[in-house]
Amino acid sequence: MTNLNTTKYTKIRYDWARDEILEILNLPLIDLMWESQIVHRKFNHYKVQLASLFSVKTGGCEENCSYCSQSIYSTSQIKSHPQFQVEEVLEKAQTAKNEGADRFCMGWAWREIRDGKPFNAMLTMVRGVRDLGMEACVTAGMLTEEQASRLAEAGLTAYNHNLDTSPEYYKNIITTRTYQDRLDTIKRVRNAGINVCCGGIIGLGETNDDRASLLEVLSNMNPHPESVPINSLVAIEGTGLEDNQEIDSIEMIRMIATARILMPKSKIRLSAGRESLSKEAQILCLQCGANSIFYGDELLTTSNPSFQSDRKLLKEVGVIFNKDFESHEKTFSSL
Figure 1: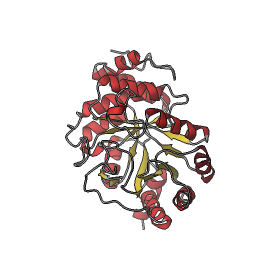
Figure 2: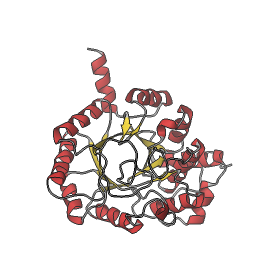
Figure 3: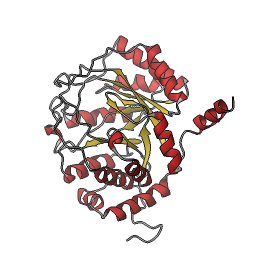
Figure 4: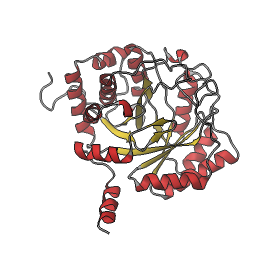
């Protein structure tokens, strides 16, 4: 086992090879967690960012992502909803801030951003969230250079566009958009000066090699994505992957730990599927490198642990989260 407080993973790199990543991913779990915790302590504080996610426009997406209930190809019973009004979205953002969220993420079930009134409303929402003193993140499919520039001007903190899986396995999950389309979108976001939020999903039926391949693409981006969401599949009835089995929590721990070693300064976000993890599994994920969680009762169209249960867990673990919320909470409790 590694000597106390030492690790060979001491440098930030952008040239990770697939075989190196597989070697890390397949380490004995105790060793992997030890290595990742050393890296985490070296490059980060034990502070967890709380990000709240709201579905601004639900359903009717033209993509055929086989995991997604919002696709027009899905027969799930999800209720579609047209774009919420600006005031309604900003009310949700204010509620999230009051509950302690640092970042407000807004999702549109689009293949690509559409110019005109919907995009102008998006820009107004971004400005409104920033005026609340929160980070603003948008996920809305592909975008043009001009749209990325206008989002940057509006103050957008980050744009989310996940790769989902490896380049090799991608065609088994999505055929309406290419892997290169996704990479091009990320490049436009980066070129506009907006932070990149980019991760993937495990439990799609991929192999360990596919997971290493996904991590290879992410960790060879220079700079690394500022935020890397690690999701586990929530199998929804009516989607192409409705019969997939739930992953073992150890697989999520391995993915979080490996991502932390490969991308030492990125926020590794414990994302979809967290509700199915035990309290102990979540603690292990936090210990070995997760330093952001989606926070709130719902993630687009799937459920999530409540605000209250998350705050209780974080306090029990002893990690730091939104200090502004802590001070407000003490003020209100003394009234």
